[in-house]
Length: 88
Image 1 (cartoon, rainbow, N blue to C red):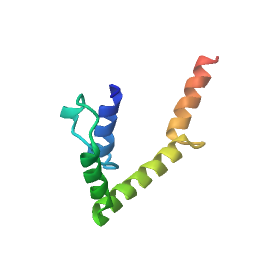
Image 2: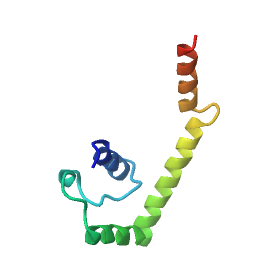
Image 3: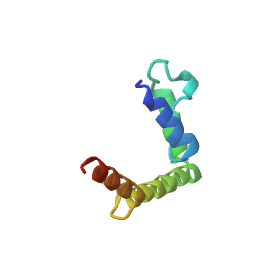
Image 4: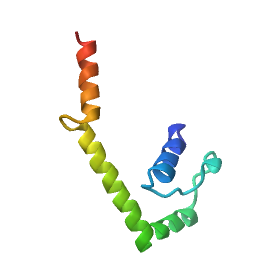
C-alpha cells in the first residue's frame, strides 16, 4: 500500500466520518485483506443508520469541496493568488 493511503483512510474514516476502515492503521503493512473483512465493512455500510450517516457526511464534504474550488471559494482564491504571484 502506498504511504499516503493509510493516512488518508484514517482521515476520511475517523475524523471526517465519511467512510469505514477495512483494517486499522496498525495492520496497514499486512497483505491485502480477503473477502471476509471487506464483506463485514460492506454489511456495516448497509445498516440503515450507519450507512445514512456516512452518505450524508460524504455529501456534505463534497458540497464543501465544490464550494471551495468554485469562483469566490477559498481554495480557488488561494490558487488564483498563487498563480498570480508566480507569473508576475
